[in-house]
Length: 108
Image (cartoon, rainbow, N blue to C red):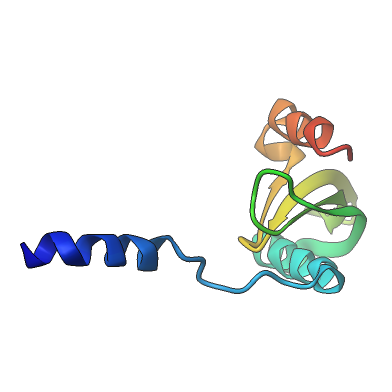
């Protein structure tokens, strides 16, 4: 019987977010960090075009373009969509239709 009393408390603890929601002014820096983790040394520039509170997820969404060095001297530019907190980014290379769906949904 004690397990049944503890279960709801454990559910609440495990469903609580691990980090507080950031301020909107901090989102661009968090997006930069997420893209730097993902792309490493090839990252050249991040252009965050839009940051908005998410209507479906806790926190914010951001979209824009990222530029990176390719093998050799060329540079590659592609779109991204990021969620903060969560600090992950989806790029065109992950599936253009997937990214297009997020861009349309959030008005990027």
